[in-house]
Image (cartoon, rainbow, N blue to C red; front, side, top):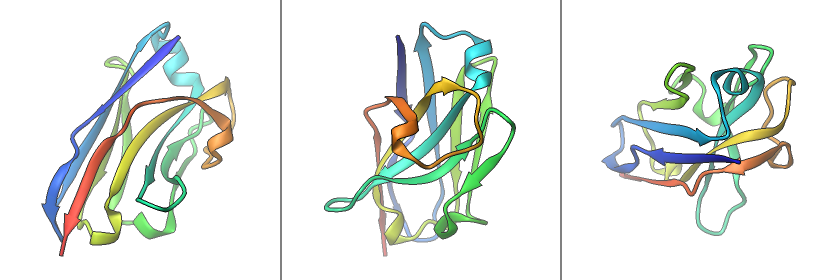
Length: 129
């Protein structure tokens, strides 16, 4: 079993920055942290969950068009931690941000929620204009 816990959310004004963290624990070792796809998703009220940034186990990285050039995904395998650096935040970035780990090992980066079976509870990001 894998547990994912997000932190780092908060309320900021437009143009501000936040850094989200997601710590993995449970039946996870560094090897598994490396070989499974991991990603950040967000969900705004009334809208579907959408992919923001994701790592593939093949080293590929994907970003949603709306965050390219502003967000950066990274990870520290030794700390079993996934990060999302968010800069120049906009009100439309507001939402509950989740990290997720894919069900199966391998694969390119993906924004398909069906590819992920481990989810954190989320951390709220609110951007005011």
